[in-house]
Length: 230
Image (cartoon, rainbow, N blue to C red):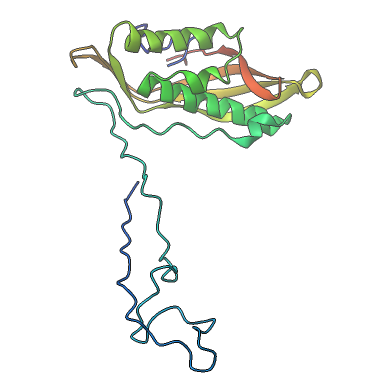
């Protein structure tokens, strides 16, 4: 079983844009005011030749868009780590003391650990990781070690929790979840961009997680992953 950087152990875990430009209309050609009252009528927005008043929206789709568009995500390669990688969106359910909230937290944890593996940013995953989850913290530390201490990076297809079966415990504040893990291919690069090897996709069955509700949010308290028997 692979125990290299980013690998899963018997109790471990592996994981647009468009600047829209709107042009201003030309100067009003000096349309004559309404003869009846000496001022433009309520519906008058432009000159007689149909040009729009530069101070009014030009109609459907005419409103100017935010010029600050999101930069294009660039996946990791031998040239360098991923750039502009989108941070996973936190589901509202993880703040609700429900079984659905616990399941949402588990799924989000995997999205956040993938984000860490791709970017070296541990903030999102740490926000939903309990202080007692040794496997979780070990995985976080291993990913950070490659980025911070070894100055390397990962190329990864991602890891996801699948087929979750949950059981509510202790009055709803703890939920036990059985599931399996689909672990995509990943590759480790050193500081010079040289590949340290590719780990192929794997499936881990009989994974178990305990998710607890504390201080208004669900967090992963325990994680056990067993490699499927061949």
